[in-house]
Amino acid sequence: MTPEPSRRSHRDRRGEHRPDHDHAGHPVTEPAPRTAAGDVVAKQRLPHAESKRSILLGSLFLMATSAIGPGFITQTANFTVQLGAAFAFAILLSILVDIAVQLNVWRVIGVSGLRANQLAGALVPGLGAVLAAFVVFGGFVFNVGNVAGGGLGLNALLGLDPTWGGILTAALAVAVFLSRKAGAALDRIVVVLGVVMILITGYVAVVSNPPVGEALRQSVAPDVIDMAVIITLIGGTVGGYITYAGAHRMVDAGVHGVEEVRSISNASVVSIVVTGIMRFLLFLAILGVVAGGAQLAGGNLAASAFQHAAGEVGLRLFGLILWAAAISSVIGAAYTSVSFMVPRTARPLVRNGLTVAMIVVSTIVFASLGTAPANLLIIAGTVNGLILPVGFTVILVVAIFRRRDLLHGYRYPVWLIAVGVVVWALTLWLGANAVQSLGKLWG
Image (cartoon, rainbow, N blue to C red; front, side):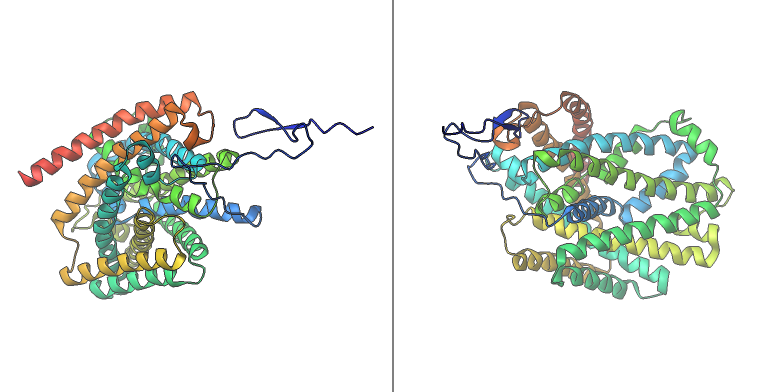
């Protein structure tokens, strides 16, 4: 008697039972995921679990260190001096909002295996190109500022001329992308830089002896609530290219698909937690100096605070933190901007060549001007304020309507959609403020 074909089944991407064999006994395979245009989403084969962990770790630190740039340090110092311990509430609330944003962004991009501009183009023809133009422009202009920040960091650390310090910073960033294994080098360096910044800032936070109890109390019961500050923090942490830095790195390295949802979600949350830890430690370091009665002087409040806290050593340590923040942001801005310019199938030589070119051109602009042009920085900041609502709208539309061709039948959690809609309203506020700022600039 001929044995009856096996009727065992497994769960497919939709969570539904699918037989392992058909009636004739032939194996049944699940169709490969495709984009709206019908293109198969390539899935790279990861050698082992350690590779996936390394990629996710590198991706989350790329997002975190991209957010922790020179502007991040300046904002934190200024708002700490302005609000005192009450700034803790703004930090906590912004972290919660940032987590909601990144959970949605990473999950949609990670499940679909498509970059943000590809998703936008699948929804509205041409929208992907508009989003890419915004990201590339903002990333390039801010990279001029990041190179300048690297120069200032090496000046504080080693006494090096700021212009030459900026050029050296850019050269080291270029070396990362000229490496034969640029992806692995990228993952490692952003992790190292992130850990270095957190450890040094933590040390200064301890030395400055901040009123931790008061900061914790005001994180939930603040004396002052400044929504403008909170919105600014949100835009600075998940605005512009930063929103997509880690998610794009993740899918480019081959970690995507419905089966990776848990890992993707965990990494997205940790990326914001890392950023929040850095901001809170920097806040405590400066708060300790301010609460002790010191008068911070000069154009760089953070540098002044570190010097008050730990003397000459503190100033040198601040230089190291600023430099680490700058070079990691140079790397993150260039990598993410280029990910919007070339397809995932592009050869590494082309992708890395464009990344190097972007860093070189931004360095030439910095070297010729001596600093980042103020008006361009304002315009780029305005563009960044527009990127978040436009890009997040795309993410939510894909999630809410559960596009089967984009999410491969994945059932998107209703609670995450609800949280995303609330946050989406805040992104519209960011966009409205950005438009008003641009109007004032040209008015």
